[in-house]
Image (cartoon, rainbow, N blue to C red; front, top):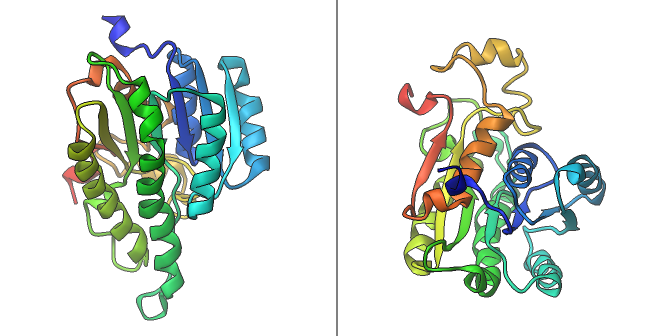
Length: 258
């Protein structure tokens, strides 16, 4: 049974790998046997720090790229293609957010967020399909795992002002289902919809403290690195080989009360 959840020998690409959920995912993959993990993010310094942190767990490499642009997608694709003949796992985790009052929300707040959160997911997935197809087997297809959000399911509280973010994550959920049908059976496409996890993006929401905020959730706590690693490894492993087009909340039960 334990072999079902191992990913020994698999090559993974994790975008948004410079901090937060991307690091949680990468750590879980390496601990579960991934042969190599490529981390992509805009800031080279952040990538260098994460690579140094994760290097004791396995082979990991950082590739700076702005995945909100076609040029960034092309640069990452070229860098990975130059080193690998096949990629087993693509985690589309890079994300952007924007907050502003309704009356002041700028057009650029939609452009930036949708470029990264939606268009970048589509373009990078399409660009890496040849490598993903090369890695796929009948028993264990290649995987694309997108990071959505519970904000893509639920209307955010009034006053949060994250209009483009919630809309973009709803789009990620639908894009996941659309791509799942398009790329089956060689590539499985699923999404993770996180709730509250400690990250730069949730810093304001957790200003009162993780323990205080977490106590208000059905499971009594905010998400922790192992919670994200667990769902990521499951979706990357043979254990999930009969699942595609799913959007899985990892939210401590928030979606059951809102």
